[in-house]
Amino acid sequence: MAQFIEKPIIVQAAGNKPKIIEEYIGRVNSKTTTISVARMVSPAGWEEAPQNPRFTEYTLVLRGTLKVETQAGTYDVNRGQAIIMEPGERVRYSTPGPEGAEYIAICLPAFSFETVRREG
Image (cartoon, rainbow, N blue to C red; front, side, top):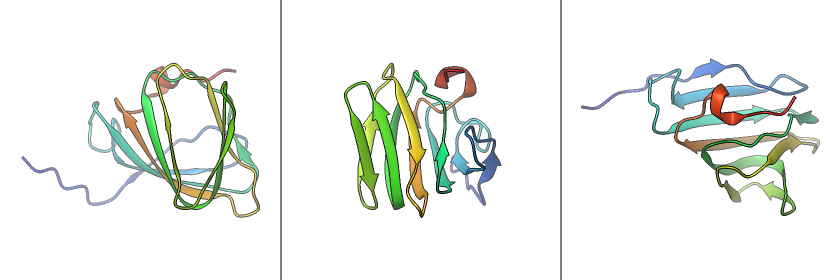
């Protein structure tokens, strides 16, 4: 049966500056546990604590640059580029550039505060 999502729900974001997370599909808005789809808008200078999530995260940058720091290296993911983070990989996200970033994050299974496992 179809489930129409009329609008996203704003969920709390972690980090040093206010960041907008619009959840379209996930545990909060659609009560979906298998996948989450959210639009993120983070300001210039935003950063969050490292995490070691128990989900795969697919990220597509729509505007700006998302800095992704991993054990293997650091990536500047720019507009039109994407990155995949596997479960158990330590990662830290930030938007140090002057325009911040807008991006879509898809998590399998759906994002939860229990499974993101943030440090600090």
